[in-house]
Image (tube, rainbow, N blue to C red):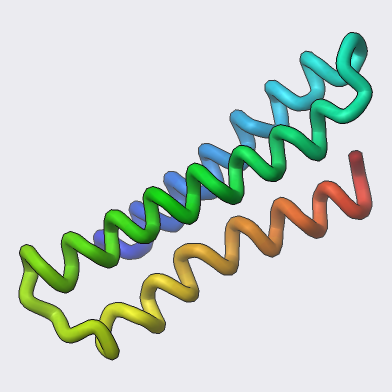
Length: 88
């Protein structure tokens, strides 16, 4: 259940980043690219911290947490790249 909540928070962060990119794109032409790069960096840090918590605090092995990390990071970032490529 925690994984689903974390994934949902990634998509909420992506949505808020897209809103900010749209707001600033009138005055700053490269705002969507900067926003998507910032989203990817922030999301990498958040999912990396989540993986660290799973390994060091919850006691999971690194090999158990790696697929969860890859799924949590890849799905929102791939969606961001697709949206950036198609819509922005």
